[in-house]
Amino acid sequence: MSKLRILSAAILLAAPLHAQGAERDVWLRDFRFASGEHLDSLRMHVTTLGRPLEDAKGAVKNAVLILHGTTGTGRAFLSRGFAGEMFGAGQPLDTTKTFVILPDGIGHGKSSKPSDGMKARFPRYDYADMVVAEQRLLKQAFGIAHVRMVIGTSMGCMHAWIIGTETPDYADALVPLACIPQQIAGRNRMWRTLAMDAIRSDPAYLNGDYTTQPPGLLQAMRVFVLVLGSPKSIQAAAPTRDAADKYANDQIRGRLSGMDANDFIWALEASRTYDPSAKLGAVRSRVLAINFSDDLVNPPELGLMEALMRRVKGARFVLWPITEETRGHGTHSLPAVWKSEFIKFASF
Image (tube, rainbow, N blue to C red):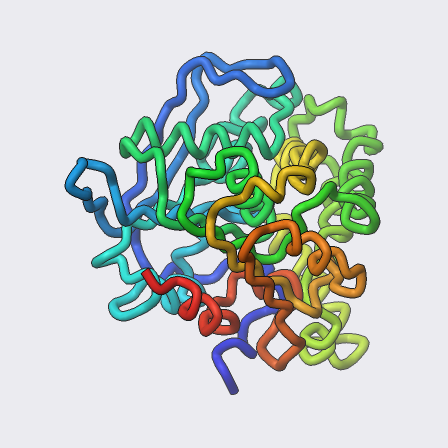
């Protein structure tokens, strides 16, 4: 049995850490959000691997920024399934040569988020705010204003497209994994709205001032789990009625553990303003975009990526076929699947 087979569909449950990293908090002063709100101090948590190397002009020349998905953290990339394939000696992002930067986005992990105490009074951040914070973090903490590459998974994939369209000179290369660079609509918007409504319509939500997690959060997790994974891999993992029931309960319980209702709503709602499609012609970075044929979040039958990629000069788009190793949307975090394309692209 391959190592990928033993992973749960869509990587729904946390994997053990394979690599360690240096962690720190960086405080961004007077952070102003696109909504007009602001925080006197915004905490950004970051994990790094390797060390920065400077060129003759003193600029860091080996920085690679990797951005996580919704409800994730930078440390998720330290799992054996990711770090073991990407960061070791002789691997594509060998950390003896590469300075890997893994931030927790606003609202996620150990960065500032509603559950820290502000609850529903926390600013209504969006993806553009998150990208600004990520770039300010790199500048303030490491003096980095330009990176060799941005790799983004799911939500991080969308951040990569924002970086490419709003700050075209920021990265030499972009690797967006499992997203589409246009407004979130259709089923992708619907499941987000259904999940948020499940929480907000719960009387126990108390407009965000609950003291224990409202039952509506469980309903939201049920919606969340349904759009992840892939029919083929889930069928293999749960081939009988009883196995399917147990599998669903295990996945929901795994997602629910440690989740906060406000954090979840804010993270989903952050996608509301996302739409880089009109500026795709501004992208100057080299681009390798990879989506997956069994991804229910970004279904390939819509044909959106093929049309959009024609607007990005020189971009390479790969629609990965369904195989025994793919896991739907979560395949973005299984580089053993797509690493061959990455290696061809990332010839530094």
